Image 1: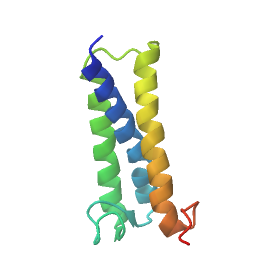
Image 2: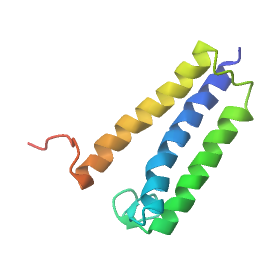
Image 3: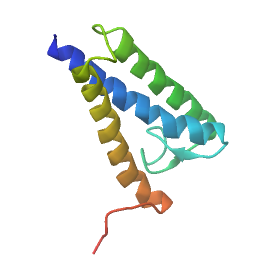
Length: 109
């Protein structure tokens, strides 16, 4: 097995997970943070920008999973790499966006 495949699956999971909040917020007609806002990642982008950004992330995740190597969902190493990408970007997003949306943001004492 090629270790570069696992790196691709990790980032495929990260892109796939990142697609969800942007696409959902956008399709609900709600503004949400994106890299295109001012300041990036903190300001709000329109719902249309978020739908496009979410779709782009989903496409990149798909390409990383299906066009690099030979992804096999029955292979533990492939699923662990994918799952770690999903988990780490999700934890990062929860902590980052929690600051703006009343989630479990780190305390600032």
